[in-house]
Length: 149
View 1: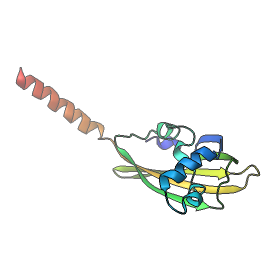
View 2: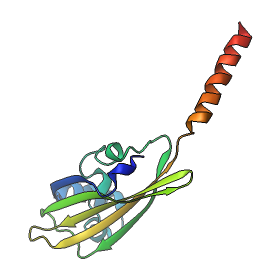
View 3: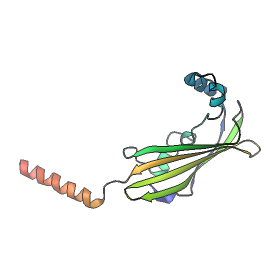
């Protein structure tokens, strides 16, 4: 994980709450309150700027990483057809021994700059094996190759 991305803005864009996308979400939810729920969460912050707008810049290894949690702060529901500005940034990165935890903050604002929603997504990544372990593995592989010749 790239610890130097702490505090960086990764995405700054405008999106529209598309009625067609909300309708697909309502159908997928299939509950009596699906319409209300869909307007609370029509976007997922880490992918709002594209599928690699967060994972790539923070250097998250998909082989060693996972989504560790999601939290929301709602100020109001989104409105169909409204244009929304979104800023996605790296709010925090914590080094916890064998793990890195990155908190990605996504803020959605309306045309007047009023906050609609904050999303926080935590990504957890297991650190790669240290270089001495990699060297030991390379020696073991060479030894195994020599033994078979």
